[in-house]
Length: 242
Image (tube, rainbow, N blue to C red; front, side, top):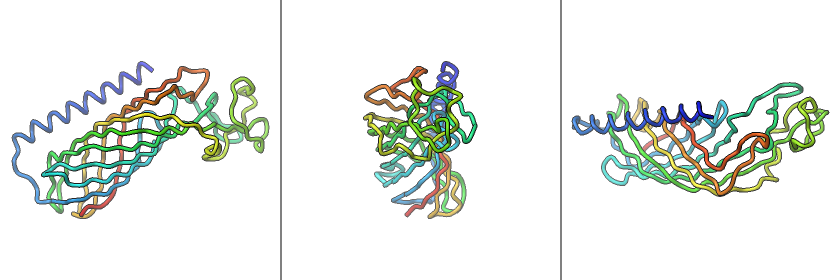
């Protein structure tokens, strides 16, 4: 845990330092590209320090508020993992000791400032921003194959031993049995947009997210669990502008 927090702090410090450097350069560089737009719609795939290979999916709407300032409306869907999750394989792959999934639905509102605006057919656009908003946590039972691949039950650390688990249940199994947690999220980010054409968007967003729920979320009963989560992340995104 200490190593993860240390890495998160380093990433956050680097992000803040980079953003500050860009603002200083912006005060010295006056020439801007001719790439103007009023509306931006993007979607992306997220990778973060609390997720798997794909941490989640992201949708964002940006509307021009004033010169170089955009109003942001976003939605994120993410699977939040416990840092102590370890995978094993028998009949299928499973995570030993896991009792629940945490699916986070995040609504976000904020501002994004363009620091360097690209030309319409070339260059890189750089922007920084921040969002805040409510979170809904879906706490979904983690199903296992118990003694038989056809016997699927929610994991119970009092009843199930390591040798009795053969694999995990089906994708999204138990979703209708979910309980809820209410929370809030906030993030700061830097965007690098590489789209080659005026109406198309492709780029990379890197940043830091903090999320807190109204109760402790039990993901692995035998480990320390928490109600506050922090993560460094990057998102590859695509979309269009008008």
